Image (cartoon, rainbow, N blue to C red; front, top):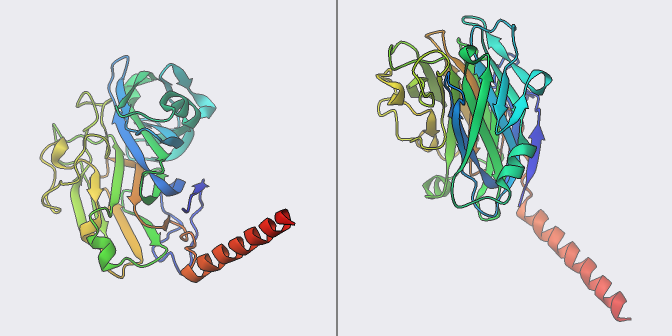
Amino acid sequence: MIKSFTLGMLLTCGSLILACSAEAALLSSFQFNGKGNWSIDAVGSNSTPVGTISADVPVGSTVEKAFLYSTTFLNNNSFVPTVTFEGTIYSGADWTNLGSFTGFNLTGFRTDVTSQVAALIGGGSNSLFNFTVNSESPNNNIDGEVLAIVYSNPSELERTIAFLDGGTEPAGDTTSVNLAEPLTADQLADPDFEALLSLGIGFGQQSVSNNQFSLVDINGTRLTSAAGGEDDGIQNSDGGLITVGGLGDSSDNPADPFAGPTNPRSDDELYDLTPFLSAGDSQIVIDTENPSNNDNIFFAGINITAVAGVNEQPPTVPEPTSIIGLLTFGLFGLSQAVRKESK
């Protein structure tokens, strides 16, 4: 089993990363390669407590990474959020500023809550974990929080999971999933194959007006023209305008990738990329754009049952002959040790 983690990855441009850009706004903050999966959820409101944020982590799991995100508006670097999550206060230097979209001073923040969440979840459960976002300050300028978790579990499939975050570039951002080996027809036909994309978007409102939306293309083909809205907000006004693809969401929408939004649930921001992939593909290029110029895509999650590197070169997959050679060498060493013991 390949199991590796990459923290604070820098974009590396090279022959394997054709779509890499030095100006990309969404940067990789964590990558996992191994047997595991993710849990992503969000909540937002102007109430105190803000609401409940859930996690789905099955029995036999180990929490490898957990990030809490907070998305703000009208924030010209004038404040850092103070958020109380399950009784623990996160403020000031606890947060990493993810950059701002200057149109409405939209700014996302990230804090590492791995230790806290790992202690709360332990070895997992067959039931959902429900956590409380106790408070936010300044509440009226914070649209909500996202809890993004990666866990390892020996019962899971081998996956590459990556969390990316930053300040959106409305004119367009590009993210590259660089596969260690080209996809095969058998791989794509396997019912267990998964290639998922989750987007976290702040300050998007689609219940009152349908003119706030983002576009997403996969390998040059339109995936959606309706990303955004306040799916995870308890209210449909400033202070609760947040959505993320995750728990309780469907990857079956939108039905028409070129249709704009008619309500917040026109698009759940959770996408199955499999229909956009072909045998022989060695890279998945994800392009996002916010033509309405008033939403902040501050988070992206990628989850694929293949070995890959996101915005970086993929991990090396050992050749079968190399694996056989290593096993042979190991068995030879073991036999020599046994001989010595028997003398």
